[in-house]
Image 1 (cartoon, rainbow, N blue to C red):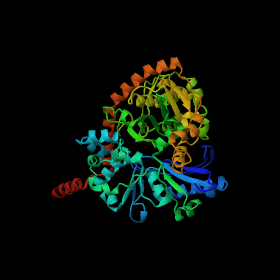
Image 2 (spheres, helix red, strand yellow):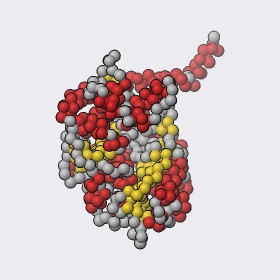
Image 3 (cartoon, rainbow, N blue to C red):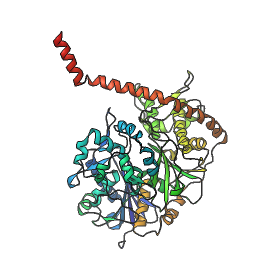
Image 4 (tube, one colour):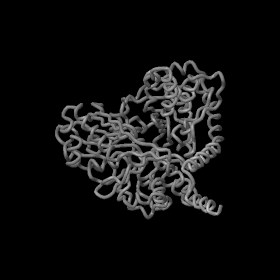
Length: 541
C-alpha cells in the first residue's frame, strides 16, 4: 500500500445509477458521486444499455468523486468495482463493444429457456451451479443469440458482465469473478467452469467466449494510463474485480454472521433474499429455482432467491396516483407520495387484498416464469387507493416470505438494506410477513462497501474478510425490531392464499402470453409465405 494512501473506492454500477463511493480504511463513508445510467426497453422484450456510455458514466462518477474528496488521486489505496448481475456484455476486437449490452431485464431469451428446460442435462446443470435457469442469465442469452443472432457472437471475442466490462476499461484485463462464473457456467463447490454445464446450455462450441476467473480479494491489476486520464485517478492504482452486486450488497449489509438463523434482504428496485451457508450445507430445491452465489470468503456461499421487482411495484402504484392527480392540475412529486404511505397503511385493513408483485414482466424467485404478471385479488366496491397501496406493500413482503420458504426454515433475524430499510412502515410489514426480527443497516451504500471490503483484504489492510466485517459492518447494524404478533398471525394465514393464488394463476399467465404473441404477429402483418399464397389466389381469381 502506497505511503499516504488511506482511501478505498467502491464502484457500484447498478441498472439505473452508477455510484463511486470513497471510504477510509475503517469503513467510514467519505463521499459519494452518482451518475444516471440509462437503458432502453422495447416491446419485443429487449432491455439494452450502451456499453460505451456506461464506461463514460463510470469515469464521470469517479471524476466527480475526486472533486468531493480532497486529494483522492494520491490518497486512493485501491479501487474495486461491482455491478448489476446477469446480462451479456459482448466485447470484440480491440476491446470494443460488439453492440449494446443485453441487461438482466431482457426477456428475449424466453424461447431458449423453455427449450433448455427440457434438456436431459438440465437437472445436472442445476445441481452443479445451484441456479435455476432464467431469461436474466448470460447462459440463456448466449444460447438464444447462438440460435437467433449468431452474427453477434461471431463478432465477439469475450462475453462479460457489467462489472467485468468496467474492470476491462479500468485495467485492460479481460476477466470475470468466481460468483457470476460459477452460478452461470460452473460449479459453486470449486468456483470453476464446468464442461457439463456449458454443454447443457448448448455452448460447448462457444466456450472460448468465457473469460478467465480471478478473485479480487487476492488479485489486483493496475489502473491503466488511459483509464487514469479518464477518471482523474493515479496510474497504477490497484484495481480489484468485485463479486456480483447482490452478494456485495449483502456482504456490506451483514449477510455473513457467526450466529445461525440470520438472513439478509435487499429490498430495492428488485428483491434479493439470501442466507450465507457453507458450500456443503446447500440444500437444492426440487423445483430447480434460486441461485447459489459464492461469497469472497473461502467455503462460504449464499443461497439466494430473487424477485424481479420489489419497490418497482411501489413506483407503479404511486405513479397511478400521480397520473390521476396530474389530470386535474400539477403532478405531485414522488417524495410527497412516498411520505403518505405510512398514513395510507394506517387507514387500511391488513391482508384484505392479495397482490402478486410481478410488475416487471416475469418472475425468477422462488419460481421461474417469464409469463408471470402482477394482479390484485379480492377487490370490492369498498376498497380505495390506500387499500391498493397496502396490498402492494404486503405483496412485496409476501414475495420475500415466499422466497425464504423455498430455502428452508424462516430466518430468525432479517438484516435489511435497500429502499425499504428506510421506511418504518415497510420494515414492520416485512417483519410481520416473515416472522423475523428486522435489523436495518445504517450503511448507505452497501454494494460499494462490499466491493471496497474486497479491495481492503486484497491490499492487506485486513488479514481476512471476517476481520473486515467486524469493523465495517457489525457496528452499523441497528437494534432488532420485533414483528407485531397479531399482524404476523394475520399474515401467516394470508400467505396460504397468496401462494395458492399464484399457483393457480400460472395457466392464466401462459394463456395471456399466447394471446400477446398472437397479437404481435398480427400487428407485424402476414408472413412472406402467407403473402405468396394470397398473391397466387389473386392471380387465379
